[in-house]
Length: 173
Ligand code: NI
Image 1 (tube, rainbow, N blue to C red):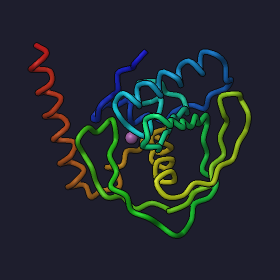
Image 2: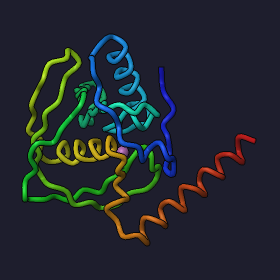
Image 3: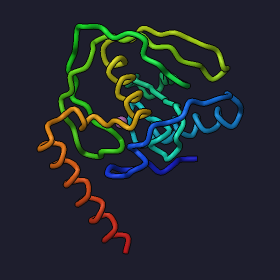
């Protein structure tokens, strides 16, 4: 089942998410729904908080080929190391539709997480995956990419999103 994605400004997107205590079928089902919602959007990453669930859960798939899906399910991800070397990507976010900005982040990161079988895993990420992981882990701490921009730019984007939300309401009514 596809879920509704929360759009900024929404106070839920600013909450800090709680670690998941136990991986069970309910969690596996939820993460499949997160993946379905992400593919449908379409996007390459989604955190549970974006569908209103305040748990530390992330799904990612950076493959562009639709026939070769390669989803990554991250439960309680923790970045344990970041490189000094940085890279810049133009980032977007499913909770900030139509908004993009160049963001500089560490080019590589090392991650600890739990997989869908409850197993502890480690991962070294670079390039797009590194940026995507950092973007998603930010979500778990109530941080959005616009927080890295100047106040002026950030306020401008939020204003546009507020206006966009109002326009959507007008059509529905
Ligand atoms: Ni995002």
